[in-house]
Length: 621
Image (cartoon, rainbow, N blue to C red; front, side, top):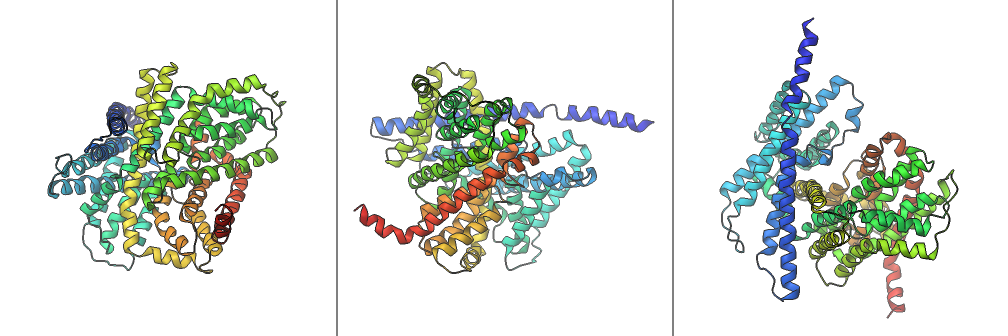
């Protein structure tokens, strides 16, 4: 009779052990918000001096990059212990309790291993790296020390969470297992293999299947490959990770995320919905078409498909259900149209692609506009053919109603126009355009009294956490990509993609098949970072236009936001609408077919372009 009492005592102890975690998370979110605000002020100050006074700040770019590394370091503990963790837990959910506890311990062990690498490797780099920044006059070791501190704090949070959510025994098991992995990676056992990257991939896949955060699974895999002949020791891993973050172009990601948060919090996104309803609400399946066109308009202001999916699930999902749509179908429509955000500019996916391949951001954004138009038409046709509304369609809006809808939505539409025009015509850089987007959204929301300073602070907190999660993934992918390059995986990839010949049609076919398979198991961002540098040289050798191929690559991978087992857009929508993800995956199949048809059309157009380009150029000469 003492066992129930013991369980009760343990159950009461668990909440007490985790009582400080929310306060710590809130403090880190506020710290991240402050860093993001400083980053915005710094970039805007540099932009103002450059364009109004003709003299920039010599030190601003490097300081901004350092602040971005600090933002990721501060947000790391929050990013890996929240919904931003990029965990693949579909298989873990269906395991019996005993097996689930084992998987949880393995996932935490992988995360502990990775945080030890970041903390100890970063400390080693900070202690031994010499010199000072020529522009800032600060020791180069500072940013590595900040990153190491973020890793150490993340380790504390991981173990604290294991103790509070499960038990002290679970915390102890995860800590010991993670330490064992760390010692094994640094043991120098000498089990050399021909391709250490294969070991890294297997370890990362195992950790991912167990539910470990994707960035930590990648870092753990690269670290353990050192025991099998891998060429990246622990300090070099951290240096490569921080270097992957230290690109001025990547500052556009937190700024575009912040601009989207401001527009959503300020209610301007809902004005886009009303304008879309005035345009297409009277069509067949009018509310579903309104959801599509609202997503197109929102894409020009956000750049994040996950943000669009969350907004659509909160605003359009309940409206669709109230109109008589089955909940799963409503969720499928919201998820399906949300993929457009990372295609239509400004697109965070294209920024990641540009950072990984050095392709022109402006050219990619123009290509994204064309691809977005094709995908929008495909989705509109798919909705028209497969969606049935039980209620009568809405009456056609009058000219005055359409004009009123356009006027109300103009402030939000203007943001996308300012960004795309500014980048495409070389008026501003991508990072400057993203900072201007934040300034535009902030001034507009405050001027319209759609947002107060408390709402601005909330947007900063949310955007800083999202930016840290994306930045951590980009940084963690860099050592893995280095290992792939050392093992000459690109040669094997080239052999696979050119198996049917080196012509544009054959290469395009096999490259898309590779992407379709890889996208089932890789996060979209990680797939871009790892596969784009491998496939792009093969595409160029086949005569394909690199920008067009890059657009097709992003479209292909974005479609996987709707496919199991990862399907991030489906999971976001199903979680908010409280609809089983499996039901949404089934309901989204017709829209998925429309998107795949559009992808096939774009592939044919891109493959045919090398033969058509001379004739087209002759016509427009």
